[in-house]
Image (tube, rainbow, N blue to C red):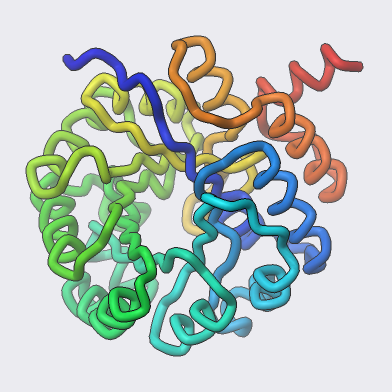
Length: 302
């Protein structure tokens, strides 16, 4: 195993991937406040918006207003999910620094959710990829169900490698390997990451882990051991997966930051500010934060 990276980038996905699953409407000003707090905490990359049809994801209907209102921190990348050219045009108009496209490593998941094959789904993003390059925007590709699928179960390593190659061909600057339903375990995580790294620069591969079975931090540590140095996390553990019963959402940013601090790995993010932010959004949503580290730090302060 390699020695652990000295520095990692944490991509904060709470404002988009986290909040999009909330049943109660969260107003634009609360989302703006959330993004601004996360910016002040020092995140280098914040997933702030999603330009999808409000019919499908009503929670994201305020994305343009949020992108207009946020206080942008120099050097921070503000990302937006863009499923098609219409979404790309909206993201461009809103001043997104990075657009995110996505595909599944599971054929069954792709067919069930968007009624087309993996190859067809990624081919649909060719226009978005070309436009992103033309306008000088970063392009990120996200691979869902890379470790397991609610419909087909196990996902072969070859299937993950195939989607990595397709996203690489589109010119992605970064590729996320996502455990959408939170079923991965450490040895499996290392095998998947090593296979992805055979197709794409390891320095530009990110781990996106959900904590459904309580394995997310173990999987992050396992990823560090093979040299992965970009991870996605969600403040207060916001989020969930509508396709996995009992899924608890993304690994909490506070927990990941506490782990990195203990390992002496630099993140550039202020854990205490993130913990305060986690308490802020949890209080707004009327429930306890899902972050153990965040709740422990809050109790210590109190």
